[in-house]
Image 1: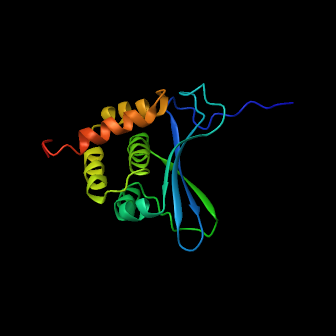
Image 2 (image 1 turned 120 degrees about the vertical axis):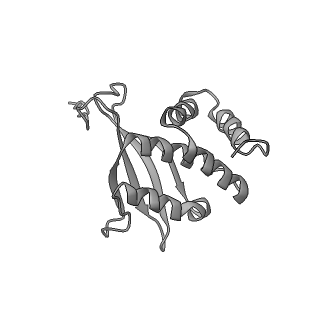
Image 3 (image 1 turned 180 degrees about the vertical axis):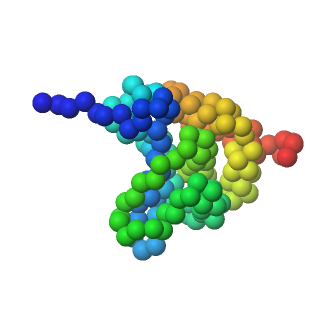
Length: 157
């Protein structure tokens, strides 16, 4: 008999977690997951929003750790190979968008410009772009459009 997935949150808000996985050596993989909740009845199992590891994470890791410290999350705690930490909705939206945006990029200058642009966005704007990147038929086109907007040399800072 198949059991129905229990909602992780009953307060009417989406539920997000940050998964930190230990890879070989001192490398780590960070990923944002959305869990089933009362606000998301279409989710029956946790859904991966975005993830980042390797060189692109290393370039951005100090900023990520500052963001997590503000949320009182210490990814270095514990010895388990995989840990999960609850995330506030706004932080999860920003991290999900940042992870999706930076994963395929190679240019440090453009990565920094995109990162600063996403950090300057309002919650609603970040939610809009992440929703477009998650639910469109061609999400890479959406992310490319956002990259063009954020790395435009004529864009006011």
